[in-house]
Length: 572
Ligand code: ATP
Ligand code: MG
Image (tube, rainbow, N blue to C red; front, side, top):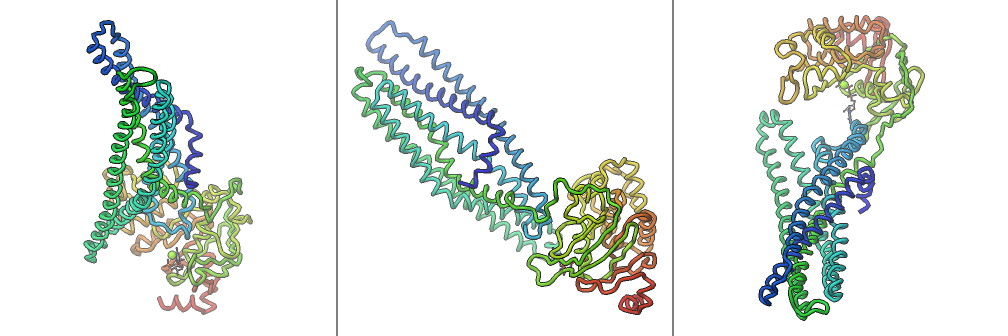
């Protein structure tokens, strides 16, 4: 139950709506029970009056009462739904936002190690499951306990034995049912939730990798996996439905038995009176009182599911980000002096350092090229500079301030990054560019697109064209140039480029390189490249090997030294 505590705390903010919802739920229940009780007594009393030939039976008042209760019940139910659902939806919205706030800084965390589908499932389905806590758990229990008390007092007012008998029967059920149905539904509820998540993950995998699966003829095998997990999910659902059926059956049986007991007890008359119409009232009150038991068994049957959802959410919200940014960190602006001081980094679970003992100094306005074989740690070095994760050893300084002391937004403002894998977001071409520079005008965007040779994208729908899933797809080279356009749009004194011209033809590559040269004239630039062109204009060339810097110097000095760099150049 401790899992639910953070969610109960959230209620404080919406206490008014939630409590009003409970008051209205209680009023509705009161009207519903009142309606059945009064009409039961009314019909019986009218019949008795008719048989006895009593001419002065006042039927106006009870008839008005019946109407009043029935209108009250209808209105109460409507108002209760509006108020409590409104409050619950607001609460879920809060929960979703706060969950996302916690999740966002965790995403680069290597040790989070969660599938996209799983995270999505937590964000959507598990948060939704939390509405259960209030709507199906707290509210019915509070209303149930108050209801049992009110009904017992009401009957006890006429006849203490009857009041006590009904009160005890309801109380036994109120305690017994939750225990039984929590145990019955616990495992199945957890299964149901986990199978839901598994199905979603399998389905997302299948959709995302559809082209590859089709090309390698693996579509059917993967499809069968979805079918399997879907079947498991349906089985868990069917099991839950059987438990619900059992719960309803038990309640109907309990109603019947209690009714028999109450009629038997009331057979000699209610209170001091002779047997009469009051017996009907007792019978109907008993029947009506079971209305408040119905939601309680369901609440506990699904409690296991709710607890599992809460646990899955807590696994995210209780995690500290591995890269915490200080809230009142250094604000810049940066000039672009970067120092790597004996920096090493090892990916969690990896056997070796991805980069080790890197020491580098880059002065503002300097350009540095990073070369090296695939997998030697070049991209990792840039990730450390952007604080995707922190070095396992050593420190990186920007403008003499350790990176860990920079405010996140100041650090982002200091660097413009073109990553090795450019991500397109599901949105318009404009959205995809504006993320790098939210205030850019349409003409700025069009100008930048022309600069990177993507003017053709402006044809047709222009900046409104939809990219990504369900929209226009870009070729590998176009994607890369869109990444460069983002890099150009983001105004920052430091430019980090991870193989910006990979996959471009020679002509386009030359154009892009000269564009970058003019754009980056007074910026600090780190460029990772496999292509050994344009290195002579770099201030420093750094050759990396197995996570370490093997050679470092200007193009000319490295050629003169006649080491590995010179060998590489000769091989061209
Ligand atoms: P390339 O030229 O192919 O882009 P790179 O020099 O950029 O290579 P990195 O991406 O820095 O290489 O990777 C360095 C090493 O770290 C590689 O051995 C790689 O397998 C490993 N590595 C990279 N990313 C991760 C990760 N997220 N988790 C574990 N290991 C990783
Ligand atoms: Mg790389």
